[in-house]
Length: 550
Image (cartoon, rainbow, N blue to C red; front, side, top):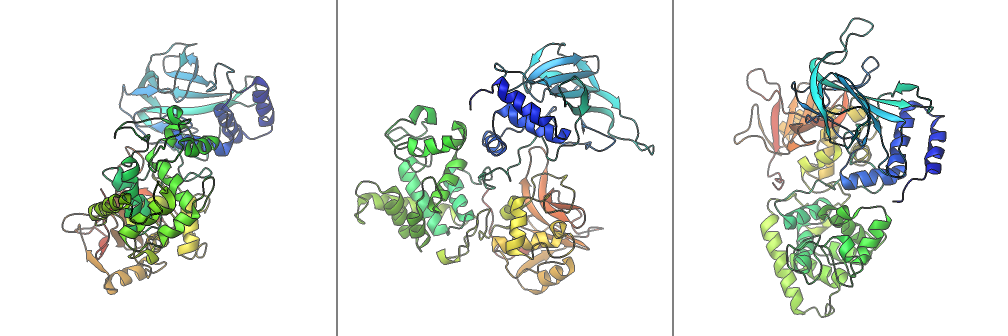
């Protein structure tokens, strides 16, 4: 992206003056990146970089933003390091507080002085007034603070050792600063469910190596196990499933896009030829080179090709592969219709034997532990986000937020993938607060995954009766022998949720996913209250359920 001119910046600020402060904040942050909102979101997803860096090593908010408590609190140990959330200039550094005024990422062109972050209750301050800091620089250590009470005498914020973080804005550029209202989204995290073509499956690849990750990816995106093996068998012949591999280089050699974009050779997991054939349209869409060279992005690019989507549609190849019913046929169809290597018109070409052998090896290695494909090719339902995969846990993780705190019942609070799935696989907006209904969440996951399409749409009691009367499930009132497994259903008086195994935002310790009627939409949670003693929840496990790859 080009530099921001002073005229562009002033124009953006002029428009900002008419808007509420929360919109001011979001627009200014967009200006900082030099991107429009959709591009900015996808660029952030691509780089896995949120708008703000976490100010502590604890990546969890312990004190929420509210009317009386305007900012975030982080419960940390005394002397814990405090970090700058962004690049900028220190405009105040006292004994207990640091203020950092935000600088443009293109800071050599223009400095934006309309937003600043404030860090309070510091024990020590390690930066001086006037210093320039970078995102992640240590600016001090955490100390003790008490934030007082609200209008009714109730305490607000945390007391004792913690960090208090605020954001302020100079709305009219007249040095009159006001604290901004609570942002609608967590500024410290990337929302991977939104932003143009950013896919919900990117970053959720599972597997011990690239071959297994690619295999699982295609199964989760509507291909049978046989078809997925055929595709990956070809990738092994082409690149060893190495996204940075340039044709003719040794395995393990990584060539970044900037080094190969003008090469006439093939590059990437399927050896797009010439290399720029895939790199240039990706760059045109605003995708950075680091992302283009990643396995997740290249898998998504390929599946879009096979779906017939621009910029390099290969719908005929996609149809041929979806029509394959055996591993060997799938390997042949991908080589013949997509790779189109020299001599591919001859079905007896020796290169097909190699690809078929690779594909059979992939199937034998990974089919037993990967998400189920629903049987033969005709049973694959497609739809992305694990639709039709049989993998209960992966679908749940794709439909639920990867952290807690998404309180509310509106569709706008839930992930878009879940709203869409409710419409397609359950009863949509019917019922009372449906997007926060725990039973509807579990049922939607069971339907969408294809694991149990007969699962009752709603009602924990109705669902419990079904779980124990359908003959499809084993159950234990307590932890099952051998422990919990991803995809286990918890059902108890008035509530149900899913155990999915470790997942979610780093450091959160989440292992479950659930909604809560009238409380919150589907989000990450914790296993609790399982059988035995005063435990309320019984564990139900689908017989012969597919086990996600480790």
